[in-house]
Image 1: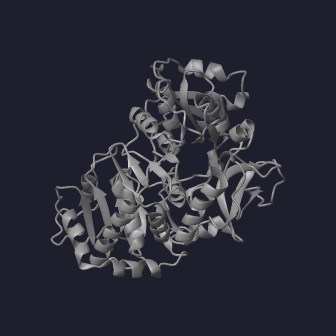
Image 2: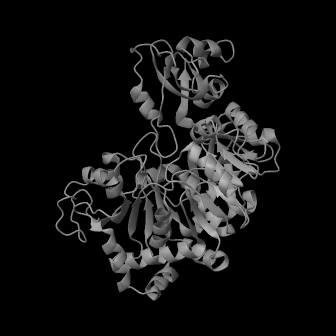
Amino acid sequence: MTLGDLLLGAADRYGDRDALVFPDTRLTYAELAEAAREHARSLVALGIEPGEHVGILMPNCPEFIELLFGIVLAGGVAVTVNARYKADELAYVVENSDLAALVTSSLASEYVDFAGLLRDALPGLSDAPEPRALNLGAAPRLRFVTRIGEATPSGFLPFEAFRQAAADVGLAAVERRRLAVRPADPGIMMYTSGTTSNPKGCPLAHAKLVESGVKMNRERYFLTPEDRFWAPLPMFHMAAVLPLVACIEAGSALLSMNRFDAGVALEVMEREGATVAFPAFPTVTNELVSHSDFASTDLSRLRRINNIAPLEMLRRFQEAFPQAVQTGAYGMTELTGVIAYNHPDEDLESRLTTCGRPFSGIEVKIVDPDSLEELPTGQRGEIWVRGYAVFDGYYKSPEKNAECFVDGWFRTGDLCSVDDAGRIAYHGRIKDMLKVGGENVAAVEIESWLATHPAVKMAQVIGVPDERLLEVAAAYIELEAGAEATEDDIIGYCKGRIASFKVPRHVRFVDEWPMSSTKVQKFRLREMFDASSQPGRPGR
């Protein structure tokens, strides 16, 4: 099955039911399918050929999903572009992904003015004489850029002209395109988070995307058409796309928002009767439980919540949502999102300390990253994965693919273990290991301990150079609202409680984090760190 097949089938079965719900608007499955077909007609009329790449650069909005499905119905590949990119990063992705067209929005964003960003990223765009046939040195394959909104920046194809182009192509032409797409063809291409280097393109096949969403639903979430699934994460990320596919398969409603605002989120979850919440990352869940309206919000229908965080933080989150079963997940973009969720029937400790068993059709093994020998149950090493969800390789990156694939197994770079029941436990990135005086230390271990401090809202740990020990831990701390702590307070909290070589030697306090789509960019923290600077200032 392709993504287009999935949507049209859902429109046939659940046409009048809500598909997408935003704070101020909603679309039924029939309306979503109709809008997607209209966009597909426009793309075909404007010359997009089967297999060509079309970028989407915009914040969360119904049009994002309409366009995503419009692109795949037209036989194209939807490239979901990170809305947090700066000009250099955007220029790299537009060129590297071979975009034939790009659609953006004038919608107010928490990130940036996209038209201005594109002008900075693509020299010559503003002066292009023919917006239907761009000829830009920085993006030689890019033929047009259009922006949803009334005003049209210079060099952009007016969106009204994009819409009107649909009149030149009938639905039959779109149907022929849809039927010609093979399930093994790429449907979406996402770029990895880029926490350590330039992002890499990950083409994901239709069949992998659909099967992953189906497995998410049928093996772990058990959604029905009555479910209301709140998923606020960026739609350019698998943490939004995979729940979307699962909801479409089940006929459930996906609740989202243009930009995350905890107060608005709580109001929507109560009003819509959210049954599943997918904040996933601690930056989101912390904002929810810290909001002044949290205690008075009726979330009684919530039966399930997904969170990924250090152990003590997960305990706090479960206590904050006693009406819901909290589960975790293991995955990455290269694995089409997620290959393992906890089953809701698992006991609390298993759900707190592991990510659950892999889906059917997925194999994993734990390997010594140096010797490449398989390790026994319970030991930590690199997790290797094979099965239906593993992508086919990075776009235009043969050297990286040769490094990451070994005899059909994908090397994830993640430090994990597997218990006797086959459940995966995540221990951090292998490259996120510190070597303190010869001792190996996982940054996540220190982060987990710091999260138990009552003043700490979130902690991130990096390794920094040290003359005596070669490398030591430095902790970046975001404090709870109104809380106070000093560098000495944080270090003192660790001494005697964790091994001395794990105790941070430096503490810095931050009010906001350098983020990729969903992850803290630790390489940015390393750039920010200066061991000779003023010692960590007291927290607010």
